[in-house]
Image (cartoon, rainbow, N blue to C red; front, side):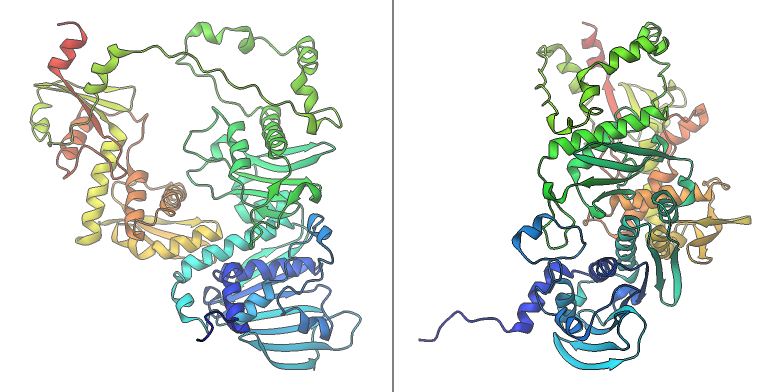
Length: 606
């Protein structure tokens, strides 16, 4: 009887291990850039072709390697960063696991050129499928150049899972941005298909932030800087008007390492409470410095998830630091003039913050926790909130039943009744229409979004929407990531009335837009379309075209606050009930509520 269990061959074991580290071209970009940083380089160049599928090359002017180290670095678990288990808890470098180059060599054809400054010659290595094919002495510049070609050439099934070039490029730009933000003192260059996308001169954090996120943030960032004996946090947060519908421009850098942390993200969001909409996300680039002994970064192969020794301390400190900065720069929510006037006359609102009051506040325990030295780790746990006792409101059961959306029938008779019946706008966001059996209350934005959605669906399948040509075509400049995304959507946008063409690295010329889209604010239009599109991106059940149609429908719809004339309201209602599904938006939100006459009479005891 033969044995069932046997050892995997080395090349198969390496390919399996590589799957944890190198999932797509962007994964290799991240590992190679971090290696260049660890080599103490001051200049790093990234070169890609075919969105990294054909070539990914990183050139640095770092310390380089001798011949022995050049050969050893491709072995699994070969590292210069770890000598003992204790070193795992004092990590200050980017790479340390000894898996990156071994993983890359298992799934690509690799060429390495490296030379130390003290050596007269360098080393060339060519590796395929983890096997060294060539090794020789060469003349080369100081530092290291490593090129990986034909990613997943030996694993066709893995290569087939890669996305379009535009999609893979967005991931590469994202990883490049994270590393470049983490090390603003290093010069970075990024070349794609012989075209330079980024040229980032060495500078400070704000300069690098503006280089990557765009100069439009120059006057929209608030500085954050707080220091204690336990940890430091510094960086920038965006003013409330920079909040977006996606998490795109959010960066946590812990000891110069980009991390993903929903927990800390919640801390920042809570600092913006009442300043931004609940479905919006603030912009931030926040650097946290903490003793490596208090964190564990060896919890995930990509090292983008870490564990803190005490998350509550970090959370409280980040939240307080952001709140303090927003308050210090007078970034606060405006007074709501719809509130009762008596509320706005309270002392806390209209009286100045005197020196006496300041002294009283400074004597408080909360103030001391974040200002006195050696106190950060003594933050007192918050008391459990006491839930209020809710009154049983049975009398509102009737109202709930009234508000139930009628999805069983289409009210096609509405368009005939509104000409003689009452139609009014409420709070500049709802349209109330009188009917024979009662009335309906329509959300004007949801209704218009429904109408546009069905028109765009028809345009995508059959007749394209006509484009209104601009007398003076507008030039729109986007971030590099958004420019790549817009290029991917260009053909579908053409079908829907947007005539655009590339104009330089990250610029586009807008020759025309749909007739009902006002001209003159093209930049804002495309920004909102792309933000909404990215908002849908994680939802895999939608096709690219479906996401785009929903994004356009949202962007073009009239928003809450828009004053409508009687004719505009009548047209809106007629067009709504010409839709195949007038009662809910594409996202499943209600468009209108129906109130029956007999239900209304019950509310008044009749």
